[in-house]
Image 1 (spheres, helix red, strand yellow):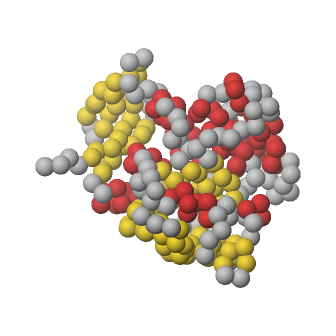
Image 2: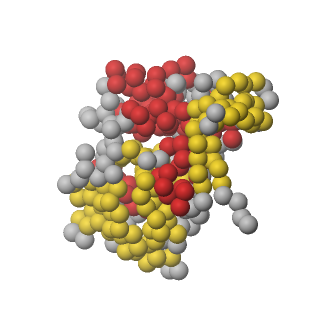
Length: 271
C-alpha cells in the first residue's frame, strides 16, 4: 500500500497549521508534541472531521483537495479516541458488531475471532461497558475500529485516560497489533515511552509546524531521549525486576509479567 500524503495550510485565529507530510504506508507513525501543537487537529483532518484547505491522499485515492471532499463515513479509516466511546447499553460483542454488520468490506467471523484473540478480549464479549476497566474498554474500542477493515487506523492518545497500571497492561496488545497489521497506524501521543515502544516513524509538531520527522529512535535521541529494551526477570505485588544491557534493575510500582519486554527510557539530564 502506498503512503498517506498530507498538505495543510489552515490559519485559525492565533493558530496556523501549515504541514506537508508523506507518511509511510505501513507501521506506526507517531505524531508527537506538546498540547496545542496541532496533533489532534491533523488527525481529525485525515478523518474528515474538520474542513480545512488541505489535500489528503492515500495512495492514488484523493480524499480531499480544492475540488472535492470525501465525507468521514466514506473514508476507509478506523478511529480510536481517548475515551473508548462504547455504547453503554450494548455488550462488548454488540459494540464491535455495530459497524461491522453495516459494512460489506468488514471482517468476516474468522478474521474477527483472530482479532479478538489477539487483543485478549474473548472473555469480555458478553460484558457491558460499565463492567469493563479502562484498558479493557480501549481494547474493545480498538477491535471495533479494526473490525471495519480500515485502510488507515487513527489513534488519538488512546492511553491518555488510563492510569499507569492499565497503560502498562494495554501496551503489549498494541505491540501485537503492530506486528500483525499491514496498514498504517497514525498514533497521536505526548509520551516518549509510547513512541519508544510502538513507533517506527516520528513526526514532531510544534505550534502547527513540523520541526522533525524520520525514524523514531533517531528522533527520540535527537530530543535527548534514548531507550533500551528491558526484559522482566522477576515480578511480585511490589513491582518487577528487569534485565537491561546485562544488568538488573528493580522497578518498584511497575507491574508486568515475567518474560515481558518493554522500552526503558533513558533521559539526558541537564548540566
